[in-house]
Amino acid sequence: MNKRNTGNSYEDLACEYLEGAGCRLIKRNFSCRIGEIDIIFKDKDYLVFAEVKYRSSEDYGRAEEAVNYTKQKKICRVSDFYRYINKIGEYDPVRFDVIAVENMGEKTTVHWYQNAFDYIPGRKK
Image 1 (tube, helix red, strand yellow):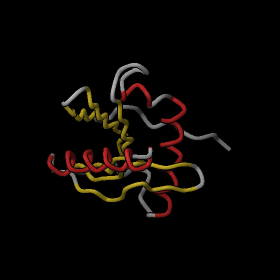
Image 2 (cartoon, rainbow, N blue to C red):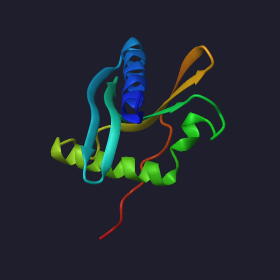
Image 3 (cartoon, rainbow, N blue to C red):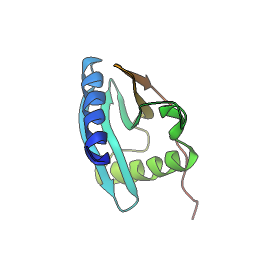
């Protein structure tokens, strides 16, 4: 299985997990020239932009640790574009989550980190 197919299968698992928790999926793999957001969903009043990370071992760190400052900043820029094209106001509640999927041996676990990082503003003009 290639990396994209592997990523899709774990994004499927993350979506099932979120739907089981009462969330409503809006969009998967939203991309623009800036980058991509894995999952966009509604959790009560929040529009949530989520990054899904998978690990089969801790050799390279935990899954949630892979969403570093650079990745967070890129997610924020893509979310700005998404909100702009969908006419979502700057005062509408948004959140940035990380969904870590770990497959250590025979057990697959999903960890949902709500409000995993704060919005990082873009450059001032």
